[in-house]
Image 1: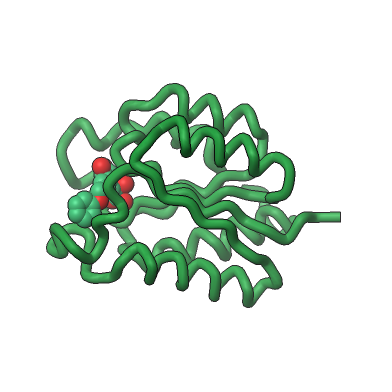
Image 2 (image 1 turned 90 degrees about the horizontal axis):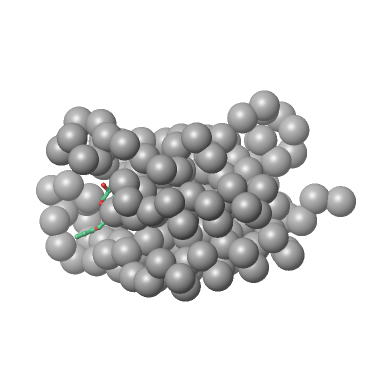
Length: 151
Ligand code: CA2
């Protein structure tokens, strides 16, 4: 039977959401993001374990632990998107379906944000939709998990 729990991962600096750079990332806080993801998942009968860390190893340990009791991962890796082979290896290692979320349109920003180490280990991508993009990602990921979509 499918475990009806998602892991929500937010990477470095996303604890600053709503506090700094509202012109790029909006005014909603990380707590708002977690609440949105929990409410969206609950509509489909899923619960959420949420983690934000500024430390790569903490994120990797949480991803490994998800193997035991989660059926999918929603992740905004923050700047690690563009730098981290080890984060990518952790995601591919646990072999759970992954949704990659970016609040801003990374493809319309600096060149160094155009490449993502996570892109091809994720089955769902939601980019540049602001904080509501997390809800879109949850719904699409649950469709993949429950077999409504191929991913
Ligand atoms: O658009 C996104 O969601 C990003 O993943 C956010 C990362 C950035 O490095 C990626 O290129 C795109 C940055 C997260 C930092 O978030 C902040 C929020 C408010 C104030 C300062 C940073």
